[in-house]
Length: 557
Image (cartoon, rainbow, N blue to C red; front, side, top):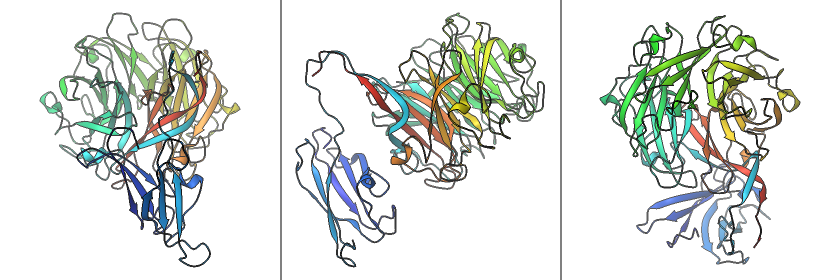
């Protein structure tokens, strides 16, 4: 079926409970030549697009029998017959059979081929792949346990292993390797369908991290992550990891690590940045309860010295108000130590020329580089402040900061219920925490301006705190031209999966580039309280954003 030269098979599970007790299901298993499973697709009331056409009822026992029918409809793909012997059409347990026309997933365009399709997206989900203890082959490599909070952070790290497919990093900040809630990070080497081909864990017990530093209980290593490109110029991407409850310099003053990686995801070297390490204290003093490291971001080479720089959030910073928050821009040396540092807060970096942070705004809870949004040849930064009260207590906000090369703020635009034209498209409710995650998406609607995604992990669509993500199509001044919500109720996401109450979909976000080669980027979304495999074990979703306009260059075949 998948054109790899190896026969595939279907397996019935007639007492599966998707959509009703013993409603039934069928799994299509894409096999390796040794009989192991390379990939799989479930078909039921909840999966595989079956419910677009029919709904099987409780006790129908869909999947009791199966048979290949060859290519009935002439579309080049095998069709499948499935028995449902408990179906009640006509009378109790009269039974039924379904002929299922399986979907085309790859269609060859005859030559002459000129250039790839140029495709744009409106932010709607075109497909999705879940990564958890139960999905995406994660459990083939590691076991996620209850309370790990896997998915609290996500980041794309590019093609680390050189196989032509982008890879993904996921944080599990309440992992207990080496102590309660010490935290961990997983590096996932992905297939083009978003499933895991191989994996490397980084913690006190895995990946060689403990050759350089020791994590303490409650450090929550992995609460934030960001790919730093190549700090040390060895040709391999490096990784920034936050440990927001580290006690260097005072209780939960916080810390961040730069991990110099090998292509297999293990740690070759590391540099800690805190009140005690990395030369940070030559410029500013971290104090108890700053929570430095709650977020990290890679703004690129801001000062033009050919070394990648780094941004770190300190969400409990008290400049101008208790828990108002702050962001530090760290100008790095190639060994990961600080050459200089610039703080942005109510008191530093010219931020207060444009806006004033209130107490408990938690400015700096999330961050992402927006490339050069306004066209001035200087990188810009998006920063979440998820407890901002515009339009309602803890409704949340995000700021777009137009930067100078020294890290100070040249201009700024706030996005909230009352700023940036957000309310022309949607209204944020009290307590939804807009800004819990932010990610740059590139220009997905083809207007020449970078777009962004913002997480709202306490959104109640489909369940209390199920969570949501907004795709914001931006103008070059940072205001919103258009917006698309993705949740249980919006943006086509529920065609593929349903997030449950308290899953916190949207806690973290990362653009993955174009994994599947359809010329539209994919988005990773962390759902750190998902219960697959155990209470709050966590999950991450890879969402393929839908093509909405594809221009085929001539000659057209």
